[in-house]
Length: 254
Image (cartoon, rainbow, N blue to C red; front, side, top):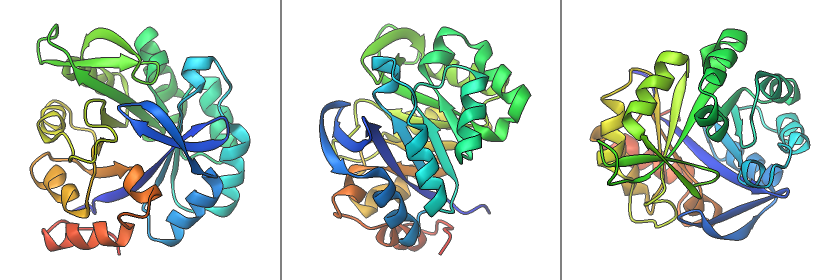
């Protein structure tokens, strides 16, 4: 049995970590490199940096932040936001990223997924899937882009399946409706995606307590769990999450 990963997420805007609710009203949460180093010391299995301004403001991905983080932190680092080409991935990998995530650019040009997978391998490619409830889709879940600001009309389950077939190595699944609410993960959404793809699924959006993580794994089928605000605030520690997961019978790395 593979251990379930616990992954802090650092949403970065203009060089600072920010967090809001439903991707709105973003507040400053500190320096990304300092937080990354703290989480590594506390037992995080991986880290995810998402530049939430890059795909909206057409800003460059924060290569310097990635490089400074890679110099201090020695756990896998996924970076996303503003990744538009295989060359962007090459640059991020050269600066210290281990994996890169794509969302908006892949929706605009799906062949980007196969371009990246063919050039660097599926293991470096994470599909960032920001999903909102959408009555106009067959599944009731809709893909959003541009930091959750724009609906696409694309069925989220069909898109997940297509991207997996194009070469995505795993899916970072974020529920826009649950994001930042601290009311628990969207287990039905997680399970629905899990049942459609064979690649790993990272559940995200809505963590409010250490007890919220285990159901997303045991019921939702997630292979890893990602959270932001409860870690940034100090409300819940990574150790507490892993203890709760282990108590529920979920294998974790100590």
